[in-house]
Amino acid sequence: MSPNDYRVLGEAICGRLATEIGKLGFPEASLPPLPVFSQAEWTRAKDPFSGLDSTVGLWKSARGARIGEIKFHGDGSFYAEYDVALAHPMHPQSWFVEAVVAWGRDDLIKTEVRLLPALGA
Image (cartoon, rainbow, N blue to C red; front, side, top):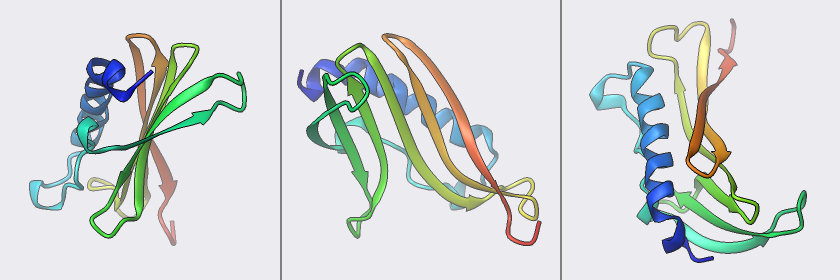
């Protein structure tokens, strides 16, 4: 399938990732760039678990570094992660926000924030 076949779901996933980032309470000026479905670079890959083809989108920074990916698997499931890489705005001495992730199947989207203990915590 092509990325266009996943556009509606992909935009919903990007919206959920952005919502999770927004819930963290970053000041407007320090918000990281948010994931935009149409800005991903697309390839195809074989899912090592199922052996089915996957459609994979990568988000890159202005300098070309990978900052996120979204995978649509042939079985209807998906996984996305998007780097935040900032100290937690409410608990900077305790937590570092590594990324936000989303996963699910069809139109069921689950999300969570991936935290790491702050250095020195």
